[in-house]
Image 1 (cartoon, helix red, strand yellow):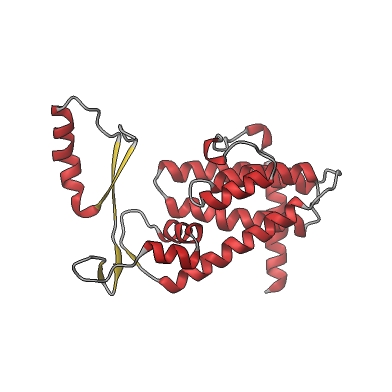
Image 2 (image 1 turned 90 degrees about the horizontal axis):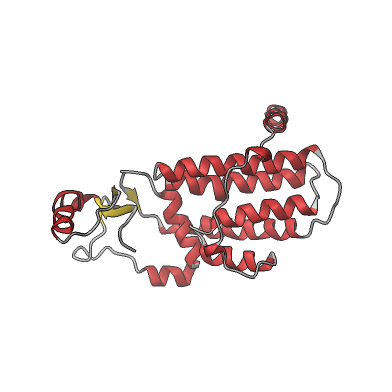
Length: 238
């Protein structure tokens, strides 16, 4: 996989990989990485996880306990660019529950079989289109947490709001799911592949094109209207 678009390294070895490693590559006539990203540490009890300290966790055991995708989502959503992150195994349970909630929502969307198009249908497709644009910005900024938040929290809210508002169009649901599952593939690939197949696709979602922003799908008027309605409902609840 070389040359790398982004070379991820621990913050303690940024100097080596920014100076010495490029010099070694140049001496061999090898291409340089386009970017070097120094990520923070995963810390426990106030210190860096280390074999010598004996405070490491076994990812294989965690994967067996929580599932690989829930674990990957946990890592992605706690990731803060250029900062250390405290390890919290208890928090993984909430991400496992979130994946289960997402799967239940997907099942509900797959059962929709309406044919009427409503204003809420234009809203959902526009909303997903806006999410695509935001997620791509997060990617360019290496904001993994921001990307995970858009895909697994905000997009889930969008799907639930669509059904709550009476959305039932089969084609709208299929298009939204097609976009949503491709959004999930980088972080939760196993579940994404299972859902992708259940949607009738014969290929793998891992080789499908990531969703692209399409200005023809944008309906800012619909988004503003629904945002206003949500704010009114929130005010009434208060």
